[in-house]
Length: 175
Ligand SMILES: Cc1ncc(COP(=O)(O)O)c(C=O)c1O
Image: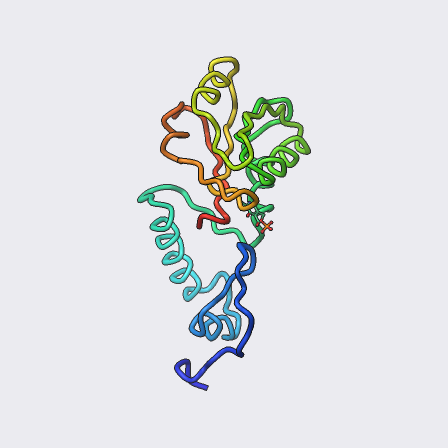
């Protein structure tokens, strides 16, 4: 069947941030036979994917990692690779996914402090700045859009608060 003929079955609209609606073109593309992950064809596709991911993340030179896994695996990678046991991490909490990121960091032995927002609100910038003055952190994490509350955290404000901390932004709902 040629790509233009392929049409997915009628289905209920999936309106959640996890599995998402995909177009006929995407479904057709993933129906192709697997290719070698070390072959020249893959190198080209992977390179293009890196550049396209940079565009989505508004970076020209940033090192992006394309992970074949869930959002939770993303937290896991941050906790396992950026933080040593006993190091302090500040979690900016705007909902359920702040709890989950905190739990993940603690599982790896991080010493976690939280700045919590009222449910439905973003973290107060003054409270964030006060926390940063009180203690030195290895990393600061925040959820760009916490899917549980719909709260959008302003990435520019978070970065401006103190650019010297590695930051982890969860962006499942926003991206
Ligand atoms: C903001 C946010 N972070 C993390 C996750 C976890 O992602 P996953 O279910 O793919 O592990 C979700 C899932 O909805 C999410 O919305």
